[in-house]
Length: 244
Image (tube, one colour):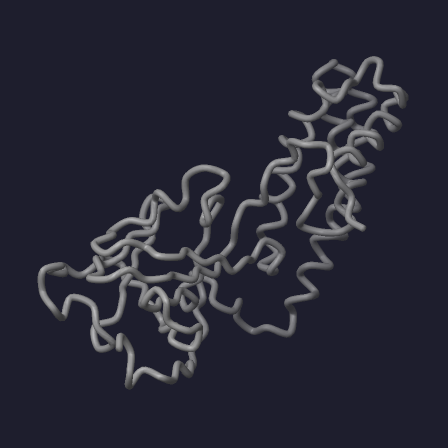
């Protein structure tokens, strides 16, 4: 069973010599833990491992849509937290069609001009194009509702409730507690304790980083990563009757 925010808080309080939380309360530690959590996620992003890779689907995107920004805003939005969409792994299909009808959407540096009033604005021949600009996905307008699948890297949700799970790595909770304790000591200007807790976290975090790197050593190129797209054909099938 994965550790949650409550586990991290309890470990941090024990490390700080305050197991009852009389000095280092939940309200005090939660922002610190989330601050360190984000920094650790950023540090581990250099491993190029699929530790924050997800596949998410947007259902029934309306005709004429040119930006997916509304689907990226708000924690309940399907694309919330997206920071690296994989170049070769965005698909689309007409809403209501089976999964086998998903077709590859092409990434472009600059979106082509499309006349939404043209009957051939989007077809099996022209396809769907998308652009990643200012952390927002933009797409060519479509003449009917579609579903879009996006595979990419997503920022894990913050730890706000006590039962929120620590993602990224199953062994991260203890490292997160050590660095949170160090941050608490920094806030209280206790340099000696801060350095001791920091040392307790640095080695294990590097171990996690090395483990994530080793997990990808068999891959010559990061599959689908925007900086190194995988080349190769994909089979789509069923397109003779697409849209019927």
